[in-house]
Length: 298
Ligand SMILES: [Fe+2]
Ligand SMILES: [Fe+2]
Image 1 (spheres, protein in one colour):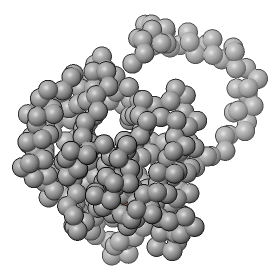
Image 2 (cartoon, protein in one colour):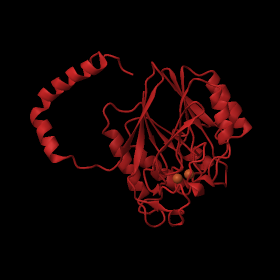
Image 3 (cartoon, protein in one colour):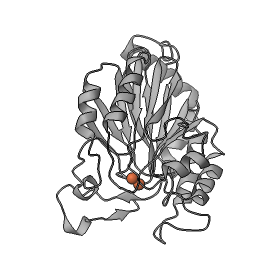
Image 4 (cartoon, helix red, strand yellow):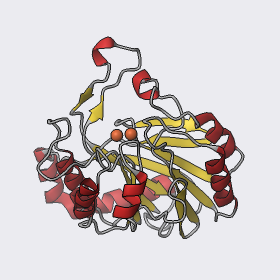
């Protein structure tokens, strides 16, 4: 199963810039274009919150218009910059939680359950997992098929970037204890920090996705110069590949900008493409004891 995770798109009204400096809308357009070039196409795309910068209907309209170009199905969850009620009214096909918008919704595909958990608190920037959310989550893990993936906005651990942790997730430890009780959870996926982070969590793995817009500087030693520093490090997305036989998860980072190929190498490969393909198939068989693709469509 192939899932693309985008995050923190921070969409504003057309022709506006975030903080009068960042073209967040163009960032999402680039991400959509990049995802549409993927072959095969992902089974789904998930946006882990902060869809908009201010949670306005006019901003959800722009978000909806940009993502309408996506070929793959999209799911979203709210972040602290969103307004859950407005999101629910504006994009009910993407935040599919009409019955319990303060909790979340689920989507089953094959042997995998995707759980989209709302970690936001109205009017606050930090997140929380309260008892009601725990009960809801537990019920959906217990009747899930073989694999469970949990998506939420606020990373459920301290990242070390203290000023982002100040608006982190006050329910992280509760969530960690809960998920540790189950051996079906293959990954936890968050956003909010605007840079890629990986951490072991509750006996599984937690990935934090970069933003498709602006990034947060790496400040893990309380460097005063980096306090609240945001920058133009490459925008990107995470590409998660879940092997539904073993339950193993492989995650790649994909930048949204397009980078030039190394010309000399490209020229050589173009000239010897068929011959090289043959040689590499032999090498693959030698290394893994089977032909590439023999493990079926995972
Ligand atoms: Fe954000
Ligand atoms: Fe956020």
